Amino acid sequence: QVELVESGGGLVQAGGSLRLSCTASGLNFDDYAMGWFRQAPGKEREGVSCISWSGTSTYYADSVKGRFTISRDNAKKTLYLQMNSLKPEDTAVYYCAAHNEYACGWDLDEYNYWGQGTQVTVSS
Image (cartoon, rainbow, N blue to C red; front, side):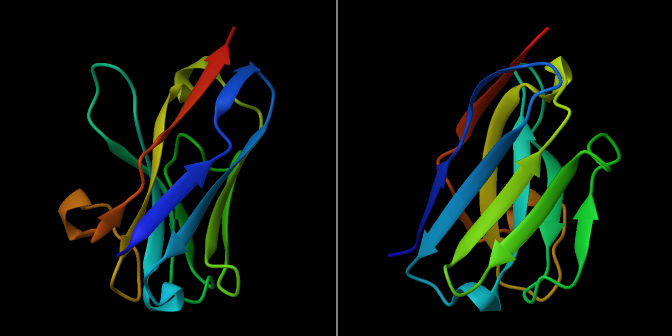
């Protein structure tokens, strides 16, 4: 069956960097748009970034634009999120998700599969 396995979370100081990875199995990876979402305590899950089937189109939430970069390696069936200049408000559980459409979207109900989540904690 389909699995999305995430890694790369951890504890970092403000201003530091992390790279999250999400490796997919059980699906034709390049048939899916992919997204990163996050959920902080007491808040709703929100979109962070997403990327089209081919990787030619990318979108970012205003809060992370210029600091985060999404990418994908279809040969390796892996999605990445490079996070630089991290801030305490970036602290959240980060999830990757797969959407069987060409372009990505922000409606959580449209995503077919979800990873287990990985904790990112940014200290002051």
